Image (cartoon, rainbow, N blue to C red; front, side, top):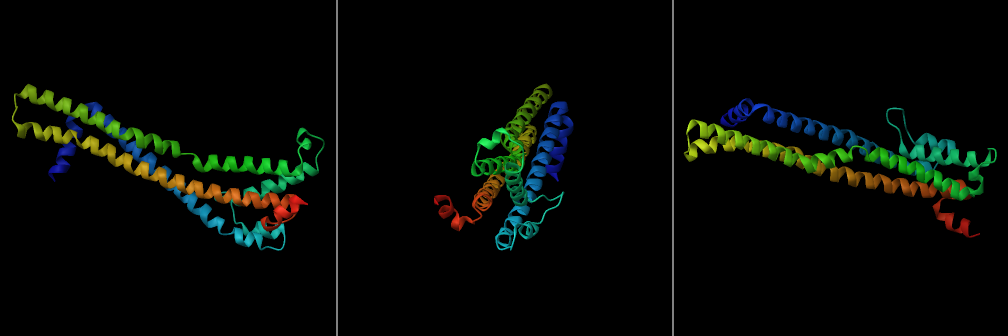
Length: 234
C-alpha cells in the first residue's frame, strides 16, 4: 500500500517532467509488446507453414504442390510466394519479348528473382526490430532521467522545508528511483524480445534459402536437390 502511495505521490508531485517521462516509458512499453506479439505470431505461423514443404515436394505436380501451401490475404505464406515467384520468373524469361534480362541464362534469372523475393521477405519479417532495439537501448536512460529529475525536485523541496534528517530524505529519493525501475522494466523485455525474434527470423531465412535452392533446381533442371548437381554437371 505504501509503495502504491509513493508512486502516486511521485506522479502527482513530480510535475510535468516526471509525468511526461512516465507517459513516454508507457508508450515505449506498449510499442515493444505490440511488436513482440505481432512479429512473434508471424514467425510462429511461418514455422508451421515450413512444415508443409514435405507435402509440397511429395506432390505429383506443381499445381498440387502449390495447393499444399496454405495461404490467405490475412496470412500470406512466404514459401508459397517464393514458389510462385520462381514460376513467374521462369514464364517471364521464356515467353516475353526481348529484354535486357534475356542476356542472362534461365538459371541466373531465376536465382536473381528468388533472391530478390527472399530479401523482400527478410525485410518484412525484420520490420519492427529496430523499434525493439531502440527501446531496449534508450528506455533505461529515459527512466534514469526521470529519477535524476525526481531527486532534484525532492532535494529542492527538502531544502525549502528545512528537513535534513535521513528519514526525511530517503522517502522522496526512494520514490524518484521508481522511474529507473520503470525504465528497466520497459527495456529488459524489449531486449529479450529482440533476441528471440532475431533468432526466429534467422530460422525462417534459413528455411527460405534452402527452399529457394530446391526451387531453382526444379525450375531450371526439372530435378530436386538430390539430382541438382548431376543435372548441372551434364
